[in-house]
Length: 399
Image 1 (cartoon, one colour):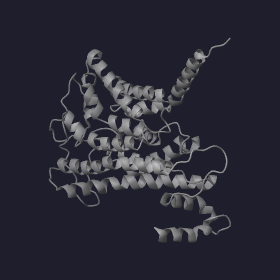
Image 2 (cartoon, rainbow, N blue to C red; image 1 turned 120 degrees about the vertical axis):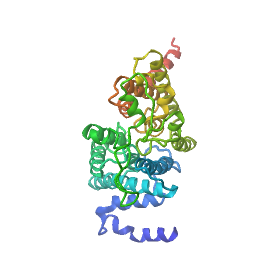
Image 3 (cartoon, one colour; image 1 turned 60 degrees about the vertical axis):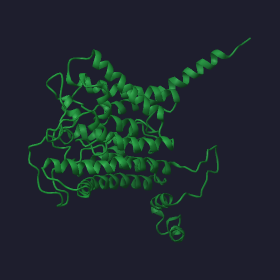
Image 4 (cartoon, rainbow, N blue to C red; image 1 turned 180 degrees about the vertical axis):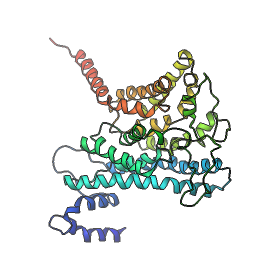
């Protein structure tokens, strides 16, 4: 590392004011602070200094997402070989999924970070770290067969209109990754719904066999429930095998790349909670809100399959758990007061189930629930603070 540090110090003057590459200072600074902790400190104002800066916080979130990503890669290969009726060993299955998911990751980062770099150069600011997480989340919340050009367009839209126009990292009111998915959902609905988009049937760079036959159903469990014509539905996998609660926990089912395995998501949640990067209050309250509203609909809801869907199944199928752990807890777009975190999370969980039940056209519900509550996070905090102020004023005794 000392050799790398020496090399960085040697070329650094070229990127400072007066150097021949001074216009690329923001890009150089971004790479330098990614590799090494900066040795500069604030010189005015009141600040709290800590060993963990925002870049390191973002890296922890990325590390927490890795179990879901790795499992998602394996599941993509698993669903593919099951669909075409072939068997493949563990590494072959994983390698197929790796080749299928890698382009999504590359496109997300190239487009998103490219816009971030350009924006930083135009503004003359440092490159912001927020897209380290958003760029990792986007490939995990879209169907594996989403065309790459669609991912590029949606990512560009989200970074520009959901982040940069608000002032960049820390200023956006909407979760950038979810805005990407929402853009895809409404602009290209055929690429985000149906049976075929959730299972990669094409070979990945010539690996993993040819085109699959059409004799399989790749509908997600929530998609099956949302479109059921009867008041009850038996969940099935892509070749007709029955699915139950534990299949949702394990995650070998159709779905977005990173959302299917509760076990993998729980590993990421554990890291976020141990490092205190995410709030356990927000995370827990989302599940409480979802369980509560699911139970209410089970008891008093309409006689439809999605209303009769057991409340505990709502928590493990679809993107509910992934959204609760990695989206609702976003420190920028969620509530910040301690009481507000309980309210914010509970309403997300409850609203997600309401959307699922009352508007089956949005089989997931979690995306819209989080984006909707992002708008009210600041308002929730405001009223929590005002309630505290009023409560303290009542304690004041005047003569």
